[in-house]
Length: 274
Ligand code: NAP
Image 1 (tube, rainbow, N blue to C red):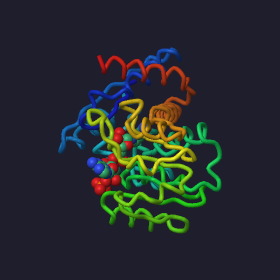
Image 2: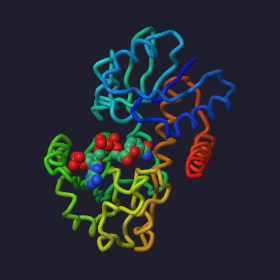
Image 3: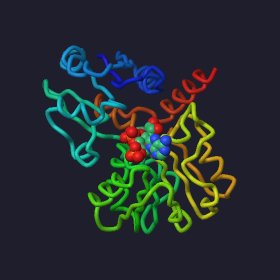
């Protein structure tokens, strides 16, 4: 069966390495490859690659996580809550859209931080990843503050979550001083812009846990600055691995080794650097 990552551009993704390593380990005769889809060709690709019997499953990434919804027959609750699809499953000829990003992110965060109950969380960004993660995190924590470059987007995300959430501008970072957890969902600091951080280092402190969902580089400037301030840190690679584990389980029914997928991702990132 054929599995794909749909997006544009996708050639530098580590997902094929993770999934192919897991297929091999489980003795499954499947192949996962990238499918770079230029704008205007998404419908055509859905017909020729996905609505065919050799299709096993797909992940969807930037910029198609929302646009793909119009081709999907049924959304699971995870996709509805996130308003975006990152995993396509084909069952009896019909397409189901899931979102495993939030599950992956929350699993990674809880394994590293522990229970989120009672925590004050500041989230930077209000895009797709922020929407998926905040829907899971908001009900688990005491307080969630969403800071975004476009304040209007932070406002509408905060209002959709209700209750214990508030919002502000990315320039106004004082809320970090009293936070337990900081989650960065902006791409600031991602390769090639590795010298950038979305946070003024004066706001970082030793009582903070910093989760940067960017995974390339493995240690972003934000994470280095946070370590210098005495904060505990977590990079984005385990989130990527756990969202992949969940997608794999949905497609195949098998439980892949997260460790095998993590090692394959690290190897691929190292090869890309050389
Ligand atoms: P998105 O929907 O495009 O949202 C991007 C967010 O970042 C928006 O809130 C945007 O603010 C903000 N932003 C973008 N550039 C900025 C800049 N230069 N300065 C300040 N804010 C900026 O993207 P996404 O899908 O949420 O993905 C965001 C990041 O998360 C990417 O780096 C992606 O690789 C990473 N990610 C990682 C995983 C994982 O498994 N580890 C999973 C999903 C995503 P505006 O609203 O003002 O434009």
